Figure (tube, rainbow, N blue to C red):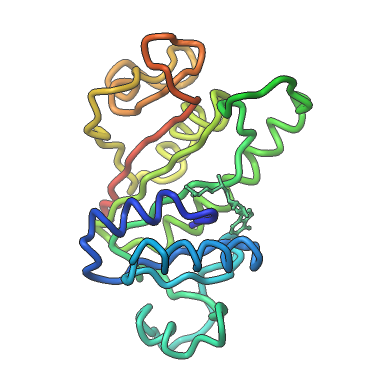
Length: 216
Ligand SMILES: C[S@@+](CC[C@H](N)C(=O)[O-])C[C@H]1O[C@@H](n2cnc3c(N)ncnc32)[C@H](O)[C@@H]1O
């Protein structure tokens, strides 16, 4: 979800060795068209690029459940209507964020209110991602911001709102634990990974990643 310009999608397609189906959706038609060219150049043949609003991606109305492949067969250009609940084994959610981790960044125009609004918007994507996942499936949530409201606080919100979403270790030895005093206990903080551009040892842009399993 939120796949353009497509860097993470290309990486995942390599990890999948082009086996299976990798749906890459982004609201911006222009951006997903550019990403489609990139997928072709990279030989990412398992990727199906779609122009879709991920805040409205789940079809909760139609009674007759259809799988993703059937829905994609009925696609017109880069568009499909929606997918049904519990359609996907894995969801990588990389929603629009305040991008406070991007470098070089010479000035920041966002107000505190903008940051709060961004995290509220991200919750709409999370709600849809949880619905889309099969039970037993994994959701990876990432941002390129250092803002705790969009990172550790979002993890706390997900755990509180969705008792069926279990936080699991991300399995990376690079980066650091999540911040303290923003909602996560020490065990939870160790399961997520945070990358801070002000940390010279990491020499990375700002990034945050957390992984969940849907247990029910
Ligand atoms: C952080 S970027 C994604 C970067 C991408 N995952 C990558 O690694 O190359 C966020 C993306 O979300 C897209 N976006 C914004 N609102 C959206 C929506 N409602 N539905 C789907 N995509 C959306 C933007 O067009 C933008 O490309």
